[in-house]
Image (cartoon, rainbow, N blue to C red):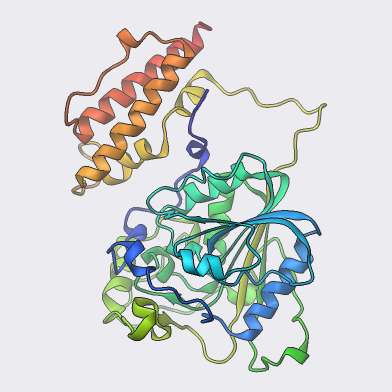
Length: 397
C-alpha cells in the first residue's frame, strides 16, 4: 500500500550518538576526488577480497554502499552486476568493477530508489557505516534490496575520518563496534549474524597469500574489553554496545578528539592525515556478515500482525524522527530543528495521508496540517491518523 519500507527498522543509536564533530555539508567534504589513494593497507584489502571470495558466488548481483574508486572485489570473480552508491562521481567513475553508479547522500535520504526490492544477492559496505547518521534506516533499505537468503557484509578497519564519524562510533572500541553493527543489522531484520576479525600484520607482500578468516556467531573474545576507563574518562555504556550509550561518555569523546585535521592539497578535507588510527602496523579487518531470512516454507504459519502494528507501519522514519529530536513534553529536552527538517516531516506526513486514502479512508476525515506546521502539529496529526488507520483496519473496512 505504499508504506515506507524503512519503518521496519528499530532505533539503535541515541540522538547524542548520531552527532559528529563536523556537521558541515557532507557533499562539500567528499567533493575532492581521491581516486588512487588507499585508506587501508594491502593486508586489509587482501583480507577483504578473500572474505568476498568466500561469501560471494559467481554471477552474483552486488550492491555496494559508500562506494569509492576500489571495491576490493576479487578480480577473478565474475559478477552479474555491481551497483555502487557513493558521494563522489569521479571516484565512482574510476571504479571499473561497477556496472552502475549512483551519487547519493545516504545521510540526507537513506532510500535506495535505484534498487528494486529483492533484486541483489549481496549488499556490501566497507569502511562506510561509521559515517551514517541513520544506519538503521540504511540497513532496512539493504534488507529490502537483497533477495531472500541474500547477504549483507559490513566491514571496517581501525581507521576513520574522525570529523565525519558519529560519536557513537568513536565512543566504542573494536569489539563494541562489531557488536553495534550486529545490533543494527538485527534491528533491520537480518538473521544469522556472524563476526570475523583478521588481525593486522606488517607483512603486506602480495606473496604472503590471503589471511585465514573465521566466522563466529559471537564477537571474538579477544576484542571484549575489560579494561577500566582512563582517569577522568566516563565509563562506556554499562549495558555494552546494545545500549544507547551515556551522554557523558559521548560528550567526553567529542571533547577529547582535539583539533580536526583538515589536510591540504588536492585531497582537501579527506587527506590521509585526517584518518584517526587506533593501532600501529597492519590494518585489522573487522567484519559482520548476515542474511535476509529465506522465504518462509509453505508449512510455516506466518505471524499475523495486529491492526495497530499494521497502522504503525504507515509511519515513515522521518515521522519517527520527531521522537528523537522533539520528544513530548516532560521527556528529554527537545532540540531546535531546521525548517528543512520540518519540511521533511511535512512531506512524510503527506505520504502517510496518500497511503491512508489509497486504503480507503475518506480525505474529508483525515487531519490536515496548517500552513507552516510545527513539530507539535505534525505529531498530533500523525498520531490521530495512525489511530484512524488502526480503527479502520480493526473494523475490517
